Length: 209
Image 1 (cartoon, one colour):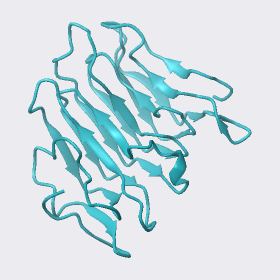
Image 2 (tube, one colour):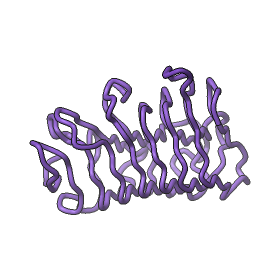
Image 3 (cartoon, one colour):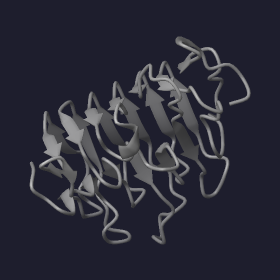
């Protein structure tokens, strides 16, 4: 899918559950310029967002984020995606729907987010923004790479707190001020089960991030 200036796939319907995307490729760029906003957006209408599974494929060059989730509908899985030249991996922001505080398990797994062109990453460097209670699980993802002075961040700020945030077996670019988690840290131990690239090497994230 290419040539779109908004969203490649807008998903609607409270009964639209377990929609499947297998090896889809979404390119939000035309002649090296980002024109697409999202690969998937479920936030168009409050209380009418769908749930989906995305397996493999790519999401490239999105001005806002690769995936935007609105309604807290049902389980969502994003697995094996290769992404680059996008501002963020995921946005799941606060919204006005009646299900705003409902549980909505979201799994990001084996996701590669390339940040080699740092100017294309969101200015706040928050590659994941989540204001849902989740549970949000980020597992075996490579977020950025071994680039000097590249600091990527994750904002987990559930409404209402404390929510549930699992961060397991990931590698993230952390060669800046060391603040990976800008709001709430993961709600389970993460310090020695994940790596950050810092001072020229990959090493355990450690406490206090």
